[in-house]
Length: 403
Image (cartoon, one colour):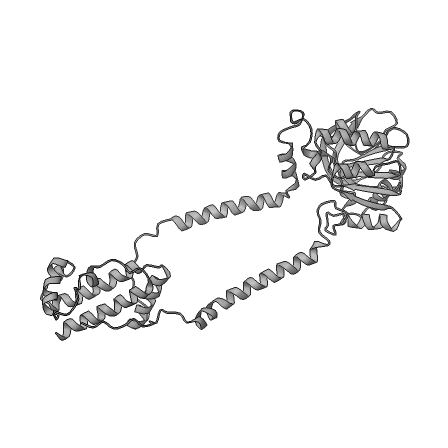
């Protein structure tokens, strides 16, 4: 028996077909990539983070920084403690945006610089973890909501500014000469303390007066410009977890969870909730994909489908699932079922090699190869072998019918 050579079938995809199917996906991916690059390029110069003087975001502070520069105040951004302390002197205002992120060693170093410099230090939202070191003699109380409050004190900057948006941390102090302003429940949210020489320390319970979206409201701009522009130089200190000084010192004197707490404090709450929602969605998707679908239910087709179309569709499904073993089994089973009656073998024995192969060998010419591997052999190793098997089974069936 001569077996025909293998040839392409309807399940083979030409390069043009592959390109036609994939070009839509590739176009979407290219547009997403280009859009991401453009968006990142446009926003890279404006978005730096909360309270960053280079950020134009609603919670950035670029607006107040630009006004201070226009008034002749030189502004320097510092992200390490060494940069901040090196620039501090009597002609400098040192703004610390998040004092609670500083370690005990960093706070001690900063306090020494504050005392020796003779300049002004402004602490934004200083809480229980930083106030005892950076502002001795000041205590903390429960925080309060940010809202419009009146000065209620004689501090010149507060009197000129009038009502501002302030709240957050509340403080207690018995320090001599301290100015306590913007009371909430008889406790101030702004405290001004005199230090050595001409220096002073200002504690602001909340940083809202420095935000871009609040600067033009109430007397926020007036108070911010007076507190930060009283000296010719301004150092804007943004504490960073990457600062080498944060990991220096005796680990026994520092909390082991301070770094972890500081990192979580920097992560916006929306990201934490988003991560939780993604985890829940992934769990539900896993349950959905892992559930058992149950047995297939047969139902009449709404339209008649040609046998050739059904065959091609089934072949594509096998190819997509890479199920060559299942496809080969179906082809061999169908061939054995059709040739068994031609050989006088009962249908119940059509799939038994001992019952089917002897009469089949007797029917075929002596020059024909042993059909055992063809009808009962292993699964094909690749698609080419599977196509060759289908052609060989067709040739075998024709040989049986014509012999």
